[in-house]
Image (cartoon, rainbow, N blue to C red; front, side, top):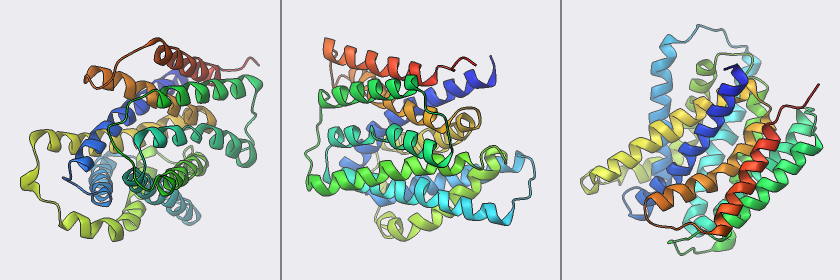
Length: 295
């Protein structure tokens, strides 16, 4: 298989990990084991350590001083603002509202890609985005929510800021992802990101009671740190090195599908014709966006 195929597979795996991550993170936060900002600090701290450890085996590269500014800017939108607004937003809104709002990411990325990266936006890609958007909304609306939201307007606004922030992050790193080895970039991205989240999460982290943790809690936290943070950010960089930013962004539409499959497997949701039809729309949209145009 060529590099593009592997990049598409990596983009799919990222959304699988993200979809499962949403369930595990919600469980840990809703059970009161870890507060949102403390959870974010755990994610970033753990992933930063892992990236620096495996970075020992990466090629030694000299980073241009001007690119450090890009790394720092990417850490704001891809780590700090992105994670802080999303987890805080989940405190005030419901997962259904959040999942609907997150479907704006591929559209925002498509616009940013056309304006900032001068990507050619084909009619087929626009159709794919619209199909995926429609399917994601239907799947989210017909999904179940066990969490009662509070301050819905504030929560929705924070999740929307997260969506725009993540979209801008994909555009920023696209400009340097071809210039450096992924491990060179990612370890500095998380190091700068750690600077942003420590002031918010340090006090909450001090109040964490490890004695209240169950084996499931340890597993959930470990999965979020290793799989849904360390793994997804690394695979995302690989995908961006082979694919357009708008293509990678569109894979986010798979998250409601993955979340739905996981919910059915866990016995917390059921399948019906509407949900299967929505999933089909999403997969069709992803196919159209990732379809390589003829020369």
